[in-house]
Image 1 (cartoon, rainbow, N blue to C red):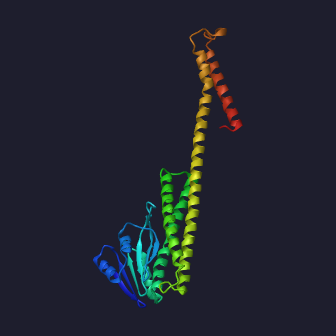
Image 2 (tube, rainbow, N blue to C red):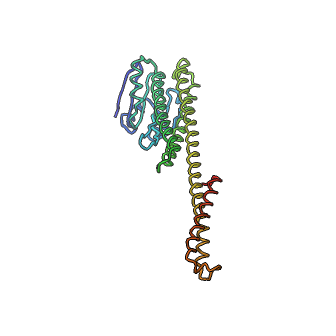
Image 3 (cartoon, one colour):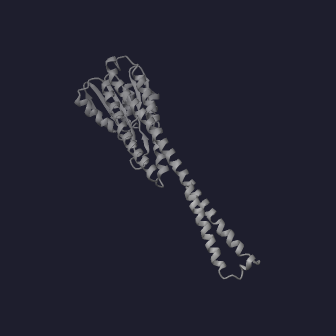
Length: 299
């Protein structure tokens, strides 16, 4: 189904929300779109690229959607056929940048297909920053949690964010290459006076890529902090258990000696005070050991 057909400054923009639509097939035959480009439109999600077919450019770019609950990042796909006086966009999911680009194009009186495409991809790249802001806020939460005491989902959250950042970097890397190729064009489809607009988008993509790298470093640092604190807690538990075991050595030794079924010297077997001497000696030695451990900083 055709979502929108707009005439903007002499440029006809047709947007489809289903690449399998019959009307799209009819338009493709009318405008003589290449079969390989049509195949790309109907395949699974592909990363950004640009193909030059002479009379038109076939461009794929990738909006990104972040699930605020799971923090999983989804790569979406928009294909564009860019001609001299027309632009055809295809996507099979709702695309907020299409709506915003139409609004911007009408507000700024855009009069060329290249500027119309710029409005579309500029709005797409502008939506990268809110996604990165949401990821950055979650990283701040995890950083505080790493110091205060991680929850059971801590590792799961870290690896979920790392997967999202890897996905983001992959998508943005291809987007950067596509824009870099676009900046080298100088023809009637992408005139030289339009290139500064795409260079501005390219700069935004580079900034997003730098943020992704810094966030990955932060997550790696948080994971190191967590693993170090986990190792320290394990060492503390091991130290405590070793300390308890050491303290029980003396009482076990003394009780073992006095619990033997053999006569003890000096008539201790018949002495009614011997039990209390044993208890007192055990407590004294154990207390001395605790004081020594405390003095050495072992406890």
